[in-house]
Length: 92
Image (cartoon, rainbow, N blue to C red):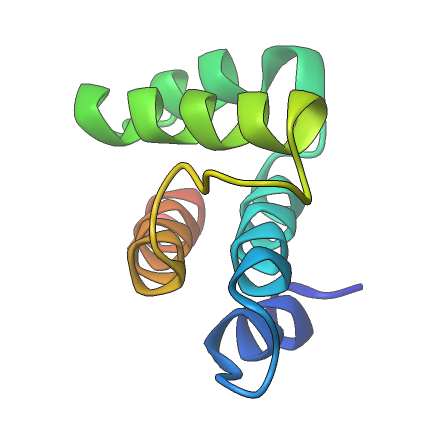
């Protein structure tokens, strides 16, 4: 899937919060598709350390907890994080 489709799902309030947070992670993953080095790759691209930490926490949830709770962040926080990652990845 493409970033635009995934971020639309992350914003869709008709979906469960868990689905929306997962969609935001998938949107982030589109920006750097090597999961084992996702956090490192985003740090090298200039993502700030706080956001790098949040991406790491989100990735841990996706790999080890999802779709169960607790969520690592709210859907709106996950969308905002995905948008920041996309902006950095696009060089904007």
